[in-house]
Every structure is written in structure tokens, then in C-alpha cells.
Image (cartoon, rainbow, N blue to C red; front, side, top):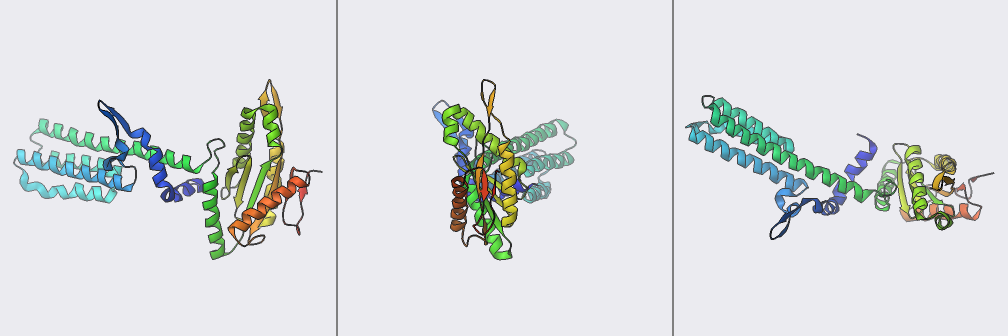
Length: 322
């Protein structure tokens, strides 16, 4: 599993309520007297509670249908065989448990009533359809839940993580450094003269510039780095490395971004540059707020000194275009 997927799964618990709310619209059913929101019913809830309830429904339905069938065929004395599918469902406790319950129940039913093929086939069909139906419904709920969760963690325009996710990741990185040692570095960047770019070429071209910068960050970052859109035309890269590595990474990004050519219409393209500030914890700051403030100050130091450059603490060097 990639680090990005692990990060999304780690944030799942903190954003589950928001994600379920965002996915609720997909569960509405039109009825003659109004609209029924299935996602608000406990049986169709996307979280763990809804999953447990669906598995319980399958187990109970299997128990009842098996009991009814065995009773009709005078095989009620074989009810202990029902323990197997129940335990199997409890073991899986997932949509696979629903399917497994249906299949195992059908197999057991066939074993005890092999001399009556027509009723057995009918009962087996009911079991399989019940299991597959609930399993498919759970699958759709899971996909909608994952999609809503991801949209709550990422910026829709650039595909990078958003401000909220970045703040949570920064908290986790600082906790890691405080507990195990090491350094974490924050690289802040801002597109130079972005307002003039928008005024001259239009907001659509501005959006294309933002997407192009996001693509560069995704391509250039390491798997352990976290790239995010901080807000507006400001971006951030969080790396588990020292300030020297941050300086080198920042300048590599600056050069890559300076090579971007953004389509602005009529067969024309325009370039852009960024100003970058680099700060580290604990080297340049002693808290999360100080780290953010320090990186932001250094970003504006780059702007005051001519833009298209990378600035770090005064005792270190500054990389600029010559």
C-alpha cells in the first residue's frame, strides 16, 4: 500500500462524519409521498455500525430460511449445522461474510435435502441473491464513502492535499520528531505576480497555472513528502528532512516550475515563477505556529529580494536566479 493511501486511511476516523454526510445524496430514493434517504437508515449507514447491522441481517435471514426449510422437510433436528455459517459471518464481519453465509447455508441445505432438488435449488437461489445483493450494496456504499472521504482531504482543482490535511500531517510530523528525534522541513511557495497573470490572461488560464504547478509538485516530490495547496496561489511541501535538503528541494522545484508553459489561448503560452521560503523544526522554530510563520516570512523575503528564489534562515545562503 502506498504512503498516500495510508495517509487517507489514517485520516478516515477524523473525517468519517463529513464523508458520510457528503455521500448521503447518493442514497436518496424517490417515493410517491416524498424522497427517502436510505443513507440515514441504520441498515444502510456507510460506517462500521451499518456494516455490522447488514451482516447481522444476513445471518438472521439465513437462520430463519434454513429453519423454515429444514422444518418443512422434517429435518429440524439438524439445526446445529446453522452454527457454521453464523460463525463464518462473525469471522469475516464484512460484505464477504454476507456472501459466505449465503453460499455455506446453501451448501448445508443441499447436503441435508439432496433428495428434494427443486426446493433446494429455490432456497439456494434465495440465499445467494440475498448474500450477493447485500454485498453489492455494501460495495457501493464503500465506494461512495471513499470518494467522499478523499474529496474532503484534497483540493479539487490541483488534486493535492488541502489545508486541513496539511495541518493534521504537520501535527503528526512534529509529534514524531519530538518523540523519536530528527527534523521536519516546511517549504512554502507562492506564484509571483499571480494577480497580474489572472488579469492579463483570465481566470481560466490562472486555473491552468495552478493545476500545472500541482502536477510539478506531484511529480517531483518523494513518496514520503506531503504536497498541499495552502490557499489561493500558495502551496506547501512537508518533507521529513533537514533544512539543507529543504533548500535543495525548493530550488529544484523552483527551476522545474520556471520551465512550465501555461496555455493562455490563441496558441500562446505563458511562463511563471515562484518565490519560496524554507523553515525547519526544530532548527528554525520551536512550535507549529512558529514554523508556519517562519516559512511564510522567508517566502516574502524571497519576494522582496526580487522573486523567483529560495530563502532560508539569515545564517544560511539564498538560492536565486542570476
